[in-house]
Amino acid sequence: MSAENKDKKPVEGKHEEDEVDKLTEAMKDVKLGDKEEKTESAFKPLSSNDIEGVAKYILDGHAKNIIVMTGAGISVSAGIPDFRSPGTGLYDNLEKYNLPYAEAVFDIDYFRENPKPFYEVVKGIYPGQFHPSKAHYFIRLLAEHGLLLRNFTQNIDTLELIAKIPQDKVIYAHGGFSKAHCVGCHKEYPTDFVREKVFSEGIVKCDKCNSCIKPDIVFFGESLPDEYFSCSKKDFPKCDLLIVMGTSLQVRPFATLINAVGDSVPRLLINMNAVGVKASFKSEGIPLKDMMFSGGFAFYDPDNHRDAFFKGTCDDGVQKLADALGWGEELKKAFEDPIPEFKFEH
Ligand SMILES: NC(=O)c1ccc[n+]([C@@H]2O[C@H](COP(=O)([O-])OP(=O)(O)OC[C@H]3O[C@@H](n4cnc5c(N)ncnc54)[C@H](O)[C@@H]3O)[C@@H](O)[C@H]2O)c1
Ligand SMILES: [Zn+2]
Image (cartoon, rainbow, N blue to C red; front, side):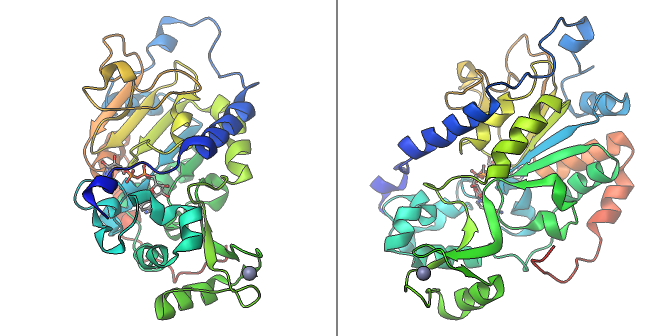
């Protein structure tokens, strides 16, 4: 990839707008929890805008429907590189494929032309090779404590399944490897067959039409699964605490969901850097792109009444939160769980 092309953006335009419109449409009649009259404590739900304040809010019984939004950063300590971390992220390590722009590796039109880079890159993410991170186990603990409404993940590595987060609690917004289809005639292929071919031959062709076979992960230019839209609509009005971890919030429509909770619902970001911040504070962090519900995180806003930011690794952040909740040992123990032999069927 030439330097001049390295930062070229993918063809976001029309298709990305369509997906955002679809989400906006799905959410249009949604009444967010707390638009009515607010008491002082509803305006300022956290005793302090930090992990301790969030832990107190949970311990006081205010959070019974927690939504956790996750991205590639929660799997970095498991050994899977993210996309956008400078130096270590996948996008900084694609030179050898001579791509027109970094995101082309996950672009459906580019894949039809040149599928090899995708098959190469995907070997490093393929499920079955990695142990989940503490952040995955923390999400499982939330479920075990009866507090998890849903985990919306952008990840495709299936570590949620290995960590035994109940699968009805997980929305795989960008799909996964549990199914695979031909991009030409749409014939479905067994996942084990596709996996075997990816590792042995580096390319997988359809026996019917000779097009390539692709695991059902959502590429740029493809639609998100229906359940992403239906669960967004159903879950976000009920959400009483939003935890966002390990994502740059650069991919829409996923990123737009941080603004789909009521405006007195606390939001905790655990990330290496400040992301999704209000555009007016872009000197402090990476802003959200234009939103269907205006806004973004208000960490740097003097009137911030409900947003907390832990700057650091997801694993350190969840351990700190677990300690404050009195679950510290439980989390360490869960993390030591032997992982089950990997199977897609669940
Ligand atoms: N593990 C995976 O399944 C995987 C891996 C790479 C990319 N992706 C794809 O990346 C796309 C979206 O991008 P994204 O926002 O998820 O990833 P991204 O690469 O754009 O951003 C990752 C974010 O996590 C932060 N981060 C990195 N390591 C961290 C750590 N240890 N603790 C805390 N924060 C950390 C980075 O600073 C960055 O802000 C998705 O479409 C997803 O499918 C998935
Ligand atoms: Zn085919």
